[in-house]
Length: 42
Image: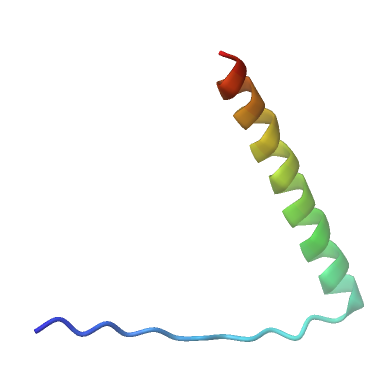
């Protein structure tokens, strides 16, 4: 018998942390989309 276990975490960042998280996600999205377009055009 297989048992799956999951944990949920919720974070409550302050304004400085939220800004840093948004910048990091935005940068990651930009890099992903850039290389995705290179892959599609290859």
